[in-house]
Image (cartoon, rainbow, N blue to C red; front, side, top):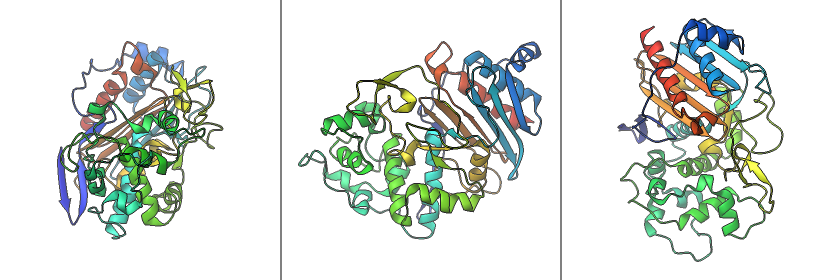
Amino acid sequence: MRVALAGGILACVVACGQRGEGGIPFAGPPSTDAAGFADAQRTIAVRGIGSDAKLDRVVAQFMKHNAVPNAELAFSQGGKIVFSHAYTYRGLAKSTTTRSTLIRLASLSKAWTSAALYDLLTAKKISPREKVFHYLGITKPLPVGAPVDPRVYDITIEDMIQHKSGWDDTVSHYDPTFSMRRTAKALGLTRPITQVEEVRYQLHQPLQEKPGTTYAYCNFCYTVLGMVVAKASGMTYQDYMTNVLDKELGVGNVLISPTVGARLRGEVAHYYNPYFGGSAVYITSKKLWGWPYSGDGLINEVAEGAGGLATSADSMLALMNRYIIWGVGTPPPYGEDAAREGEMPGANTFAEQLRNGVNFSFLVNTNTYAYGSNPYAFLNLIRFIEVSLLTS
């Protein structure tokens, strides 16, 4: 990982995703045979601008072989979109994909939070050295009176941007972002937890490392950083996305995807995942809910800055034209070399800024294949897209 600190603004460039860094055992490239594509083409509807038969071929076969209902792939060169295709699996998808279709971003949401932080840091509305819990005015733990490691109160905004909070869920095996039902029940609540309650409950959780010293990917950190965006801007996180970043980038479609209930206007009709669990929204309900709809312990509206947003692949390109996809900063004129993956129940996403100046984004509304016989199907496809765009 390369980290540069200039003028108090953090810029981190790294290829990493929600699964963690390194060690991805790619099983080999996806099939590009014309016969296989002809079969997939009868099933997968493709619409959009630009032409790349090879990419259409592999995306269609990936969707057919892995039961992917909706997908978007877009790439730009020199800030201009040159290819943007929407894919629909006929007979499987519950809605038709267009270039403007919204799909949950999972951890790509963190890139939008980082963009907001960059603007607020450069405007000197916040300092990266600010001790984050004191800044937010949240210093009393839940349960009331629970002991807190005093180093928790030394965690800075910069520590959280760098994923160096001191909490490491690979050691603790506890990620508060996917434990919201568990937290609500631990606090004796009969309703969903709020952001402030989630933070107060986390204060007393043991640190695994000294803050500011050790990288450990942290979903919770970006929930907190979303709260920093709200406080520093004087508006809600969603309002900042709508009234500032949306307008700045000219996209107008970066929205928090409702955890339960009706989908957003223009959002895919359904998120696909095979598992069910107790709801983080309906705490007293004995009904099992699909993981994409709070059965995994996640509430999008609480984790908004970490993984709650939905948008289109085109809008991801607009973001990458101005901001780096990983870390806080702006891309250099000669091209970037940074990537971010997002995965949550019912969505898998990827965005990358390639060193030749090409940016691309790929979004799908399932991660079911991750539990099957080919769990690396998505990343194998991403590897193929990378090579194709670097060599074309």
